[in-house]
Image 1 (tube, rainbow, N blue to C red):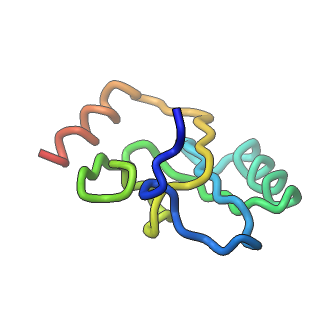
Image 2 (tube, rainbow, N blue to C red; image 1 turned 135 degrees about the horizontal axis):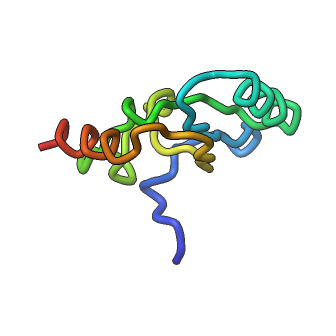
Length: 95
């Protein structure tokens, strides 16, 4: 399925890719992943599941912390404790 142009965060052709790292906390492993993404030229941002929101008015229908201009180029889901609770919190805040 082709990507929808309006769901992609606008960025200059020379800028680095943006990655959301979904993680419960910024432990040693998350920090190592952030460092590795940086070494590869990507801008990575940790996002907790409870801070993510559905947003039907926004680009792509999601709102992720640290990506106010749109969606990241990729999302790596590392850890999410209380997943069912986190997803229900996201859904309930958008009614």
